[in-house]
Image 1: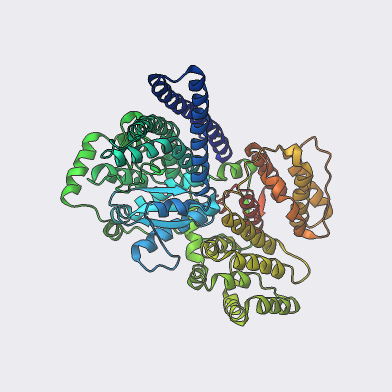
Image 2 (image 1 turned 90 degrees about the vertical axis):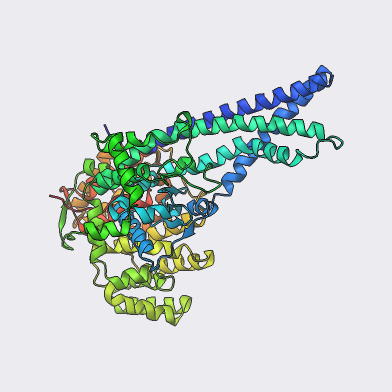
Length: 635
């Protein structure tokens, strides 16, 4: 039975515990090897037993300290997120407003994936010097993720195949694999650092062993070099043990996401059939090998971070065999595939479909929503295509522009009341100047007419350019968004949701690793916060106090049926929710699953929700790091 998002998150946490255990075992093996080398050297020199014991103690402490400090320093160097890994490997960042056709195709695919899964658009990079077909996702959380593809992937894959590869990487983004992978880089560096030191000393001294004391240093370097191979053995074993099964799961998720096997299977066939395969020439590919879509290094079977390629293809197309792959290889040796040409020949393009009417009601059930969280289903990618096509080109261009992104957000928050709007104009003019106000005013003609389902996706598109701004600019922007939302003395659901979502995303992007919460609380521990959330949701979603109480009770009975927390209407409206998010985000994965079931029961008391209510639910889920795809009634 396939795991849902919350089960996968819990599985990733268990794997993290295994990683710590394996790391400790590797450290123990390295310490024993170093101590053994020191013991042999000291015994041969006639050192007394007491001195040997003291030296071994110092050696053990020193070895552990070097490994531990090296791991911490390496991990700290990756605090800024996945883009750091991409840049270290030599990748080039793709700008939001790029006009290069292949970059534009890649960005379109990734933006559609983000809309479909309700996560911020990640940074996008290309390894221009790599002819092999490969990709990886890196980062601490979706708000600081980066997706990188090789030039070979851009040149050789058609749009369906590129979608399949990107969907595979989004599985790692959504399921906690990405965070585990970036931790693994830091852990493995600590294991390998003594070998790196030994190799540099050993090869730098080969010509100078006759100098005084050089012999002893040479022996130490040789011991460290041998220890390095022990570390390399453990490092590759750890990567192999943690990575293989997750690649099968990510392939299956890509099929579920894009609703077809030809994309991901076609990409894997090209990896196996082209001479370049998925191999990478980058010197640092070894360090990040566990992250890649395909085997980028070429390990022996025991150390392989990926399942055999033919097994991955057969899992998608059971009748496929080695002979078929050989035939494709021979064909492509004569005429290598051109992804852009295949797009034109096959007529491949973005997904499309109609949006529901702005005032439609969507059928909704708690179990179906839980199944969708963090795990886009059939049709979600098509829904994202419909959203993209319905969004005006001018607003999409503004969302991708470093100069227009901030005015666009302000335009989304403009109030229909003339007095409130005048206050908003004064705020923008005072804090950001007349030019920003003029740009926001010009955009408001289109933002006022937006379908409710287009507002949250615009926030996803705006995020990449906003996070490139300096911290003081972002802090001033967040403060302005909050002030604009409250300009009329109250804050409606959309204003609150947009402000809350932007605040969470941008705050996490400023300090990625520090703002990630590994939840351990149970619903009972935060029952007052749960009661407040359900009270506000019920109060805003029902026309009468009696119906609001019924909605509250429906939600609370799913989360904490024995709780004595009562329905408590809030005079401050949705602004009262500011205090609940840290506590609710600290819930464990099962607690969040139960909470969302209760939210669905509260919002959809009659089994249906409006489009606006569904967007509210998606926003709450995003703030709690449980991304929910666009909700459409698929009948």
